[in-house]
Length: 356
Picture 1 (cartoon, rainbow, N blue to C red):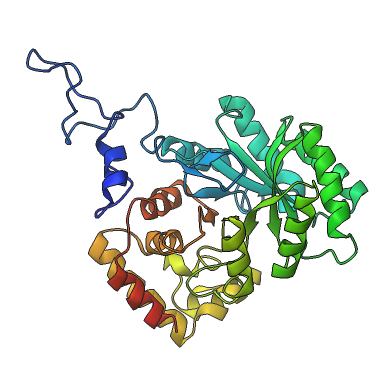
Picture 2 (picture 1 turned 180 degrees about the horizontal axis):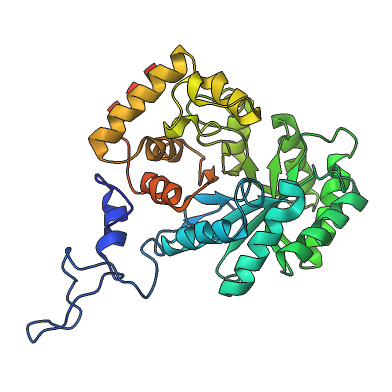
């Protein structure tokens, strides 16, 4: 079966029925003839979505418009299960992975590094790492930033990080200029290729662009918690600055801690835990109303509710690729369907009304 859903756009449909399909040659086939739409999906060859790539801002990277996060690796799922999820993502055309040196005390990086080494997948993977909150190397000061990057490179078994997200949420000490000066050295040393931002204010992004005009490296990617139920942190000045500067937005919390996947709809279904409290916070009239609207749209398009949440994000200006975490292979199957559908204006209006 295809994983891009009913109602896919023409560009997406061409991926599903294009060169990756196989057919049986007959005497009636002509050279260069297009494969029949009913031809089976190959079990060998390029992944189905490998032709679907979008530019990641000014980083120079081309990525699948859905980034696989590693937050669950080494925490809720072990190495073997994590590798199955990574395999499933890659088999569907995915090539962008994001992790953090703070996830499971570095265990997530170790698991991803093992997977890239075993599959010889490093060169085909756009690897992003978030630093700044690991208790062993806290903050974005020069010494800790360099130590954090070196430790991540060791765990990931690689010599470079494609996008280094600088997490400013817990650092009130390091100056932005000092952080960018250190990042410049990391880039010149070949250890980092491009910089991303998390937790910087709109004013700080403007300051960073002024510093870039003086020769410092630019912040070209922005990670911000953002979804249909959580819009206030991005809407406003941050969105305006990101759009004006051409910063690629890769929103995290795409499913609002899993609530927008539709699996948890009652407080009786959740446990007393951090995640349970996060889910409970979304279980109000607004959340229920929004989820029902997305259920209806998903049924209309023959895609899961979680895929509708992804499609909604991809319909937002400046959003390049949401970051999603998966617990199981079937979650990957569901989420990638959001890449291949385009919500209509009526769909977007209905969701906006429900989320008010």
